[in-house]
Amino acid sequence: MRRLVGVLAGLVLATAAASGQPSATTPAAEHTRTKLLKVQLSVNFNKMPLREALKEIAHLVNENTERPIFWTYAADGAVPNVPVTYNCRDKAVDQILDDLFKQHGLGFTILAGDDHPRDGWVRVGPGKDRGDITRLAVLPPMTATTPMPTPATPVVPDDPNEAAALARLTAAKTLLGQGKAADARLILGVVSGKYPKTKAAAEAKDILEKLNK
Image 1: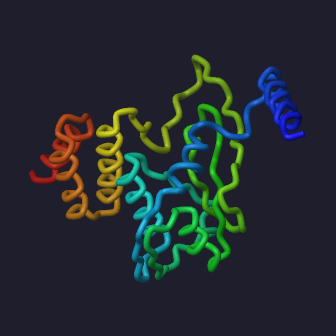
Image 2 (image 1 turned 135 degrees about the horizontal axis):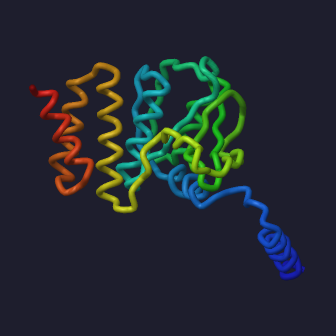
């Protein structure tokens, strides 16, 4: 009986693939669901704004996997940036998110969209979702007259060192945009010192030189 069920399931998947219908998920979304959200972390947040806590989680995941979690949020005001106090030891990220979100009526889903710039991102918003897949709308095809969209986030390089350096460079640029030059200098120094042969390191050095003038 189990074998028959397995055969039928395989036929359903084969039929969907033959018909050209997109899968409900994508490799990037599955990587986020089965790998990034399963990383075991130890955290200690003391009245830290929620979004800062999520940035810290993304940073720690990147430290463990060389690939961060990218967050996106529901409409402005729908996700309160409230202070959170929370600590745990060796707990999976999805369980940490459940603990953080349930007291504020928030949930999270994993975005999936073939060739979509936010494929594999985690969307935070009101609700009780806990890591379900949300299928993104298919983007219209590019034409010669279609303006190139501004990417929401840099493409993550395949090389682990390049990816790690780029993640830190992006964080430093964000801090600069917030007027936190001192914090940005520290991260830029790490990029140029720890990943000297990467493209991100070269850009980090240029930014440091401009800041030091």
